[in-house]
Each structure stands twice: as structure tokens, then as C-alpha cells.
Amino acid sequence: MIRPPFNARFLRFASLRRFARDEQGATAIELAILAIPFFALIGAIIETALMFLAAQVLDAAVQDASRLVRTGQAQAQSYDITAFRTAVCNELFGLFSCANLQIKVNTVTNFASATTPASPLNPTDPTQWTLTPGFDPGVGNSVVMVQVYYKWPVTLRLGGLNLATSSDGTRLMSSVRVFANEPF
Image (cartoon, rainbow, N blue to C red; front, side):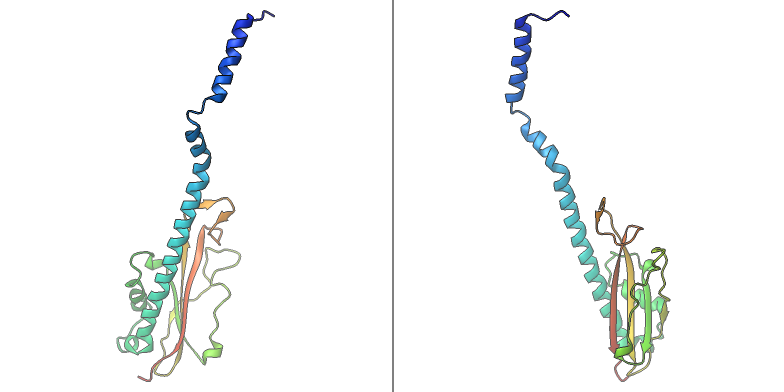
């Protein structure tokens, strides 16, 4: 094996030492290392905030639409489930796909008997709903339960660390109101 002269080996070693001491580009390398977790964290914060905002908007929309049932306005105007869905959707500011809202309005005998299902989704196939939509707003003094559910799509998924609770990449949002109609 032919060995390079001592000077050539020394120069190669010296250039490696200079390269190791050189700090130009260190910031770029540090940014590259930290950028992925940083932007993932920022994305998770934004997605969580958007999800909380959407849940609050859904809850407020159901509250406002339920007021129409409670005061008898929905009954006086012969609302059906489509009209009630429209009343809810008018308050959603375009955050939701109104066609995907699952709505059930029904009368119950008393407040104690107003129970919701553990989950309105099929446990073996979370893409299927078990909730039967319906609209029965009752009459004056009836106890009414309004249930509205929506599968919110989760955009950011980082392995097992995501906000989706379903295998189809969605998170279930719900808003339920139980009230006694006014004596109209």
C-alpha cells in the first residue's frame, strides 16, 4: 500500500480539524434539528384551539336553536328536522358541514329519564351512526332533549399523538340540551 507523504496526511487532518472548529452554519443545523418538533407543536396548538372554538360554536348554535323549541316558535312555524338543522347551521359560521350534523330532538317523561347514549357511533365501525335522527319538539310544558353530534376531522396526526378519537381520523363533538318547554 502506498502511503501519501506525511505532509498530505497532515494537511488532510488539519482540514478536518478546521472543519470541526468551523461554526458557520451551526444555526442552520440547529434549526433543522428543532424545526420539525417546533412546527409540530405549533400545529397541535392551532388544531386544538380550532377544535375548542368549533365545539364552543356548536354548543352556542344548539343553545340558540333550542330556544326556538323551548319558546314554542318552532312548533308554531311547523318546524321539521330540516328546518331545525337550518336553524342550527345559521349559527355555525361555516365551520361545519351542516349535512353531517346528527340531530335528535325528542320528548322525555321527566328530567331524570333524559339519558344520552354512551356513544352515538357504532363501536365496531365508528363510521356508522347508531343515533336515530328525529324531531319531536313536544307541546307546552313538555320536557325536551336536543342532541346534536358532529364528527370533526382531525388534520394533524403524528403517530399515536393525535387528537382523533376514531379510526377514521375524526373527533366526536356533541351538544345536548334538556329543558322544559314554556307553557305556550
